[in-house]
Each structure stands twice: as structure tokens, then as C-alpha cells.
Image (cartoon, rainbow over all chains, first blue to last red; front, side, top):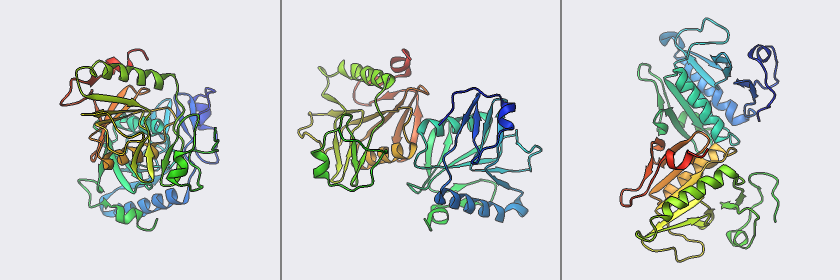
Length: 167
Length: 174
């Protein structure tokens, strides 16, 4: 999945990909190919966050390249910001990142990415697994199952019923 | 040697057919599908050896029965092969045991698929395995699976036996 030829961040930023890739310490890292289920959940997440945007100032964005470090760019399936980022490629940790798992996601790739978000300072790292129809949150505890995904200060709760009912 | 082009073939077979097949590297059987396991590599094999050495110290004085790569029948149509199973009290009586071991240990390979791993761990839990341990050599991490999730721990230990797996024991040669 990862090419071994080393690339600079500058080269990466001027490359185009039919399906956008990530950049991890000099390597181009391809993401899982989008599928109906993945795209459908991403759409539902966008609409749920969009519904609370105006009163609560939450800015959700799908597939945004984020610069975690000079040689580390990741693209969460959904990122949620409390203020619109100043840069087109945000360099500040968002309030929430959401990763939607695919059947061919490798454990190590997923956990490496989640750990990078944690170290970067993302306070809410959410994992949506359409195959098991389960949610988890990632912290220094590990990967903890939760019955719903919620933010303490916002009237937003994602339940399996909302995200998985039409799969 | 049967060759399967992908991780899981979609053709359905019966448990009886599965049990009479041979595989160069043994596969699992999950609801009618053959599920290939990650190919063993040097790190995987080393960790498996080190864990068996640790458990091996105890087997003369404690009723622990370690079994590497043993097929377990979790349900009539679900067979899994933990990297190491450890039975307690008495050794398993069946060739393909259908009673849960005290411990099931999975050593992660680099191409381990996340959803497949979590599904397998959840099957062990439902089967009744009280200690589901995950050893991740690449991140040098240990974790424990239960209904709460996959929890990072500083060591893997049993309350009733003097067995403790630490990063120092398992990862110092990596």
C-alpha cells in the first residue's frame, strides 16, 4: 500500500491523486478505496453535523488534508472544527476526527493513524465500523466501544440506529 | 495445497468439508467461508516462541496446558486458530476443542486486517474465553480485549497463576 520511494512534503503537495493519498514520513500512503457504505456514512455524518452548524458553530469537513507535522499529512474521513481553519490545509487539531473502517483496512495502519491524531491533540477520535455496526473511541486507554458517539458540550449524538439503519 | 486468491473465498462450504481439507498454512472457517490467516514471519514466530517459553516454565507446577495453533470450534460453523491457546485444569480432550481455553493469544502481523481481528476477538469473548490477549510486536504494545473494547495494558497477567508477559520479556530482541 505504501511506496517505498521517498518523497518530500513539497513534492507531495504538488501531486494529484485520483483518490487522495496521505503522506507519512516521506511515504505516500494510499487510503482504502471508497465504497457505497463508506460514502453513505460519510454523507450521513456531514448532514448530522451540518444540522447543528449555525447554532453551535461546528464546522464539519470531509476528506480534508491536515498537516499534523512537517512530514505528516493525514486525511480523516470527517474532521469537525470549532472555528473555520485559517489554512486550506489545517495545522490545528480539530475537535473531532472520524474514521470509517473498510474491510481491507490494516490494523497497524488504523492504529498508527489514530495514535497520531491523539499525539497531535485531537480530543475526540471516533471510529465507525460499518461491518460490526459498532462505534469506538480511541484514547490512551485503547480502542473503547461506546454505544453512541457524543460531544459533552453539544446537542449531538450519533447512534447506530442513525448511521447503520439503511445498510 | 489449496490456493485461494483472496483473504476469503465467497464460495460456501460445510464445516465437514473444511475439516477434511488440508492447508499448507492452516486457515480458519467462519460461517461457511475459508478465512486465510496472515502468513507467519520471523517476528511473529519469535514472539510465539517467547510466550511459550514463559508459559513452559509453569507447566510442571501449574495445571496450564499451552497449545499453539490449535483449531477451536467456537460454534458449529466457526473455527478459529488462536496463535496460542492455554487451557487450565485439564488438557483438552477433543482434537478440535469446543470448550473455551483460559487464554487466547493473538500476535499481530503487519497485514492484519482491523475488522477481521476485532470480529475474531469478539467471537472469542462470546465463546467464553476469559483472557483474550493481543500482542502487537510492531508497536511493542500489549492489549486486553473484553466487552469494553481493546485496552492497552502495561503487562498481561493472570490473577491465579504467576504468569506475566511484559514488553521487556517479549520485545527486547526486536
